Length: 272
Image 1 (cartoon, rainbow, N blue to C red):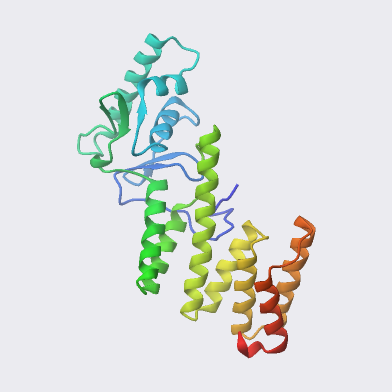
Image 2 (tube, rainbow, N blue to C red):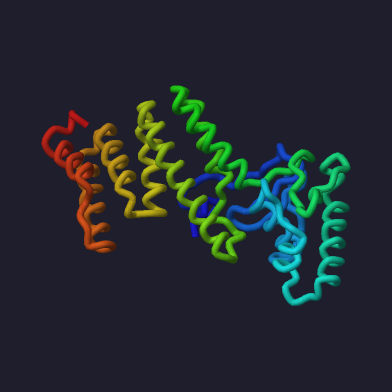
């Protein structure tokens, strides 16, 4: 599991407390509902978690009544399960409407149920990806410092891998978000390097390698950062570490780009 919480973080990002959103559904790391910034007491794995997770995983299309009933009450008759769904939605409205200016957290339109994003409700996966995209746009526009802030905001939201991953679609989404998180950390390292903040660039590269030690782009970033910091011997050791890991994990050798960087470091470190 990829985790970047306060205590067991690979990335060293402090645990976030999302106080700007009235009701915040957290799917990354462990499931949690923040109401006005404070965690609500919900039974782990309970019906409320299943319902909100199911809808949060389908933010744009929602879920049909039949899908929700089958997902949450698979062993219950359709009529009884339908009553249970109505009761659960009503209960969540009673618990959350005061934070949402009296609006319900779940709305029913046509044959589908969706989260009521117009009410002041948010989901961490959506804000995570929005922050990543903002970072990309800012970086493309040449606003590197602002891009760094956007990337850092995204990583603060990523407290761990997607909790709601109980089926194939959930597993695929978990891996997609995980890959996005790792790519974001790599982009953050590049951005710091472009600003000549080599210590931060190195820190990002090492955090990434702690999660995925086979990432050659992170090994190269560490090597380049070490050289710029005047630690040539450590840059050479990083190459040897990369070579050893690839041999042990995949019986493979480093990519040509890694070999070329090693040669430059060894023969002309000033050219890095």
